[in-house]
Length: 129
Image 1 (cartoon, one colour):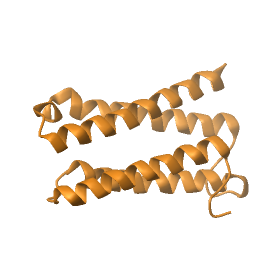
Image 2 (cartoon, rainbow, N blue to C red):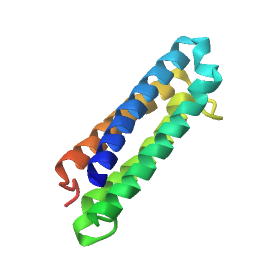
Image 3 (spheres, rainbow, N blue to C red):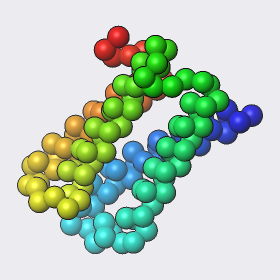
């Protein structure tokens, strides 16, 4: 029962965080004032916190941990999340002056990294073996 609640929460947060990343990038790209609205700036932090907490809960319930022999895929997923966060800062222009082209490249790379993270989560097969 706990596993089911954690996995559904985790999946819902994944869908929300990807959707928010895409919408926020589009709003910034098009200069939409909604990109600066308070809830738009705060909601991703709430969703990402729930995503992290549900992920930690899943590790605890399944006893799968990064940096272990059976958690290689999880280690790669963790590094993917770190790379995605950095790319998100560049794509969304947080405190970084960047060209629109550089932001677009960071956004596209962020989507690629998200794909890899989701693939790792579904297959549990490490990329680097």
